[in-house]
Image (cartoon, rainbow, N blue to C red):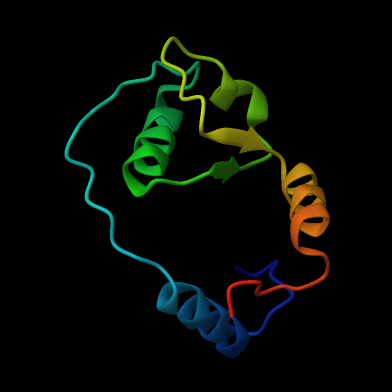
Length: 97
């Protein structure tokens, strides 16, 4: 956290705002999609359990590998995600209001 450009108060405010729009999603199954990095399996399991449309990461290569595929789940970089967002919603950062 020492490298963060945000102050401690700003980080707490950002985290509080983020958590205020999050939902707790219990994962009651283990899909074991067998990603190249075993540590990535839980990300895919949680995304599927939560009905996520995308996993946004710079680790696309590892997350796209694996035996079990989910056609509705996109694995994309932050740049790709933001480009798609802007094409879909323009510059509106909160299109659901």
